[in-house]
Image (cartoon, rainbow, N blue to C red):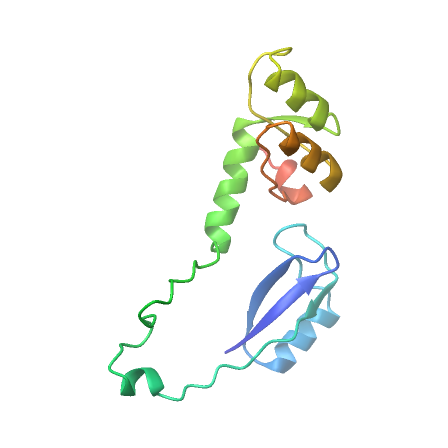
Length: 151
């Protein structure tokens, strides 16, 4: 089994597991790989540092996988299944307002519209402006194929 760090043209990063380097090449050539976040089939390998086990943690009396004293634990990436569940829940429980998201978020914040959970799209500049106004915004890339899914 071989694990590659992958990325799409939208700069989403993820990993892929393959039986061999040849299998990765075959799937890439056949356009069988796609980004789990946006669905793009323009996927490529990203550089990565190899892991070399030196055994030093065991020699220092620390168990494998345990962080050294004073070193904070690293947060693990969300698993693909958990992320898919989260996206499904957001799609089920929010109203899609599309490109009108910044205006609708402001109306709700300033009590000019009824309070409700909304989703939509906004530029990075629009998101920054909303946050500057004290409006809580969370960016969650939802792949187009998830939006058309019936529940």
